[in-house]
Image (cartoon, rainbow, N blue to C red; front, side, top):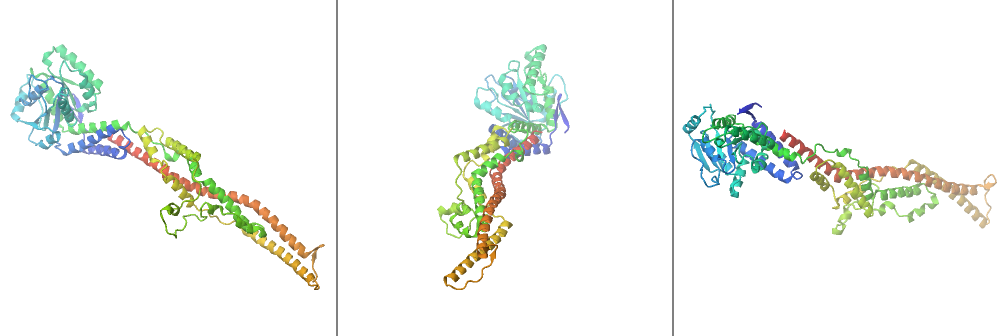
Length: 566
């Protein structure tokens, strides 16, 4: 990027590629973060983007320079002097200039550009007039060519007519170079400095200050006011401020001012410099609306969130049912053979909750009406969360959101909060479906099979002993000779078989019931991990992912604004 001399100042050339890249970055920042950035800043930034696109398309070989000043500063006289003809009306009644007037140097057509600027009063400067004006000043100065210059005389920015002020402000937003024209009486005017110069201070490379009517002052007075005005411009933020003292009566300073303008025109850099300054200014203002970094959602503690969502999903209730179901099934396989029939009196705890051990939704084989929709979609019969549980979910969610948005500006924090499910029913339905969709099946323990075999053996032994006794009783009843009954020690074998079968079967059942409690805890832990993963997936879907999407947009907006601001 090479500098172009502009009087004593340097004007950096800005390539079309750089301007296009910065404009694109600003557009992308608005696309990703306009909803969370300052609304006024967004509106201004969009105007800047539109202006940059339009101005880049229009007449790149022209440089638009505007003379702006307060009433009585003599800017119209200065305009006519620079043009070399009485183009702009000068009169005793103020304000005189009611609409912008344009003077065009060179043969290139600037009609489309002036149409865009909304300037209808136009004057083409003849080459002879330019030569005459170049020869007019008392102090001969070699002045560069002004071909490509479009010089505007704007209405007074302090005009009593509101429409005049608005027109001046409108055009100032579109021009390439500002020439602030003031006079010895109004050079410190607060409106000039507070509402124009300071606001446009980022455009210092395309800003020229003129102290007009210098003939009304002594040489020391010119030097004193020029120094004072320079200090005011520096205080406004104009870096390297330089003031030109001019007089349309004596011609003082006119050649130097023309040379400064000619330098800006020669490089065709002022328009892109102004547009880049606009883009940088808009991006810089919006940059305050984003933080320097974003929290990492993956590093935010989520244990409290998962736990509260698990309670809201009824996971403790389901796990209690799983443990009871395990003990119930264990009794059916390992309990005393002659007591298993009592299992039928105990309700299936999982079926009461409309939970399928295999996971997944219940099969749909029935006609559906409106009242059945929620049931068909897989609603369980888990009791709705209590008020305290719902409050715990809300508190945990707010805590997570607060930690995930820590350090972000207020609008972004609000966006993070709005992105999270706030009780519209989707979260509750997702939690319920997550529980239903989690498989509660687990492989039957091997010890069930072993104990079951033993219980059947012991049961058959007891039955055999009992049958043996019945047969012996029948023989006695019929007064038939009874067969010899073997004995075990002093006890008859049938009694031993009956006693062993009953006592060992009962003892093994009691032992199995104790061991089933241990197994139920293990099964509860296994299914608990599955349910925790399912609940965590819901938390990801309804909390973490939406939060991360907002943080991602914040990151994109920050990166684009930094690239646009450079």
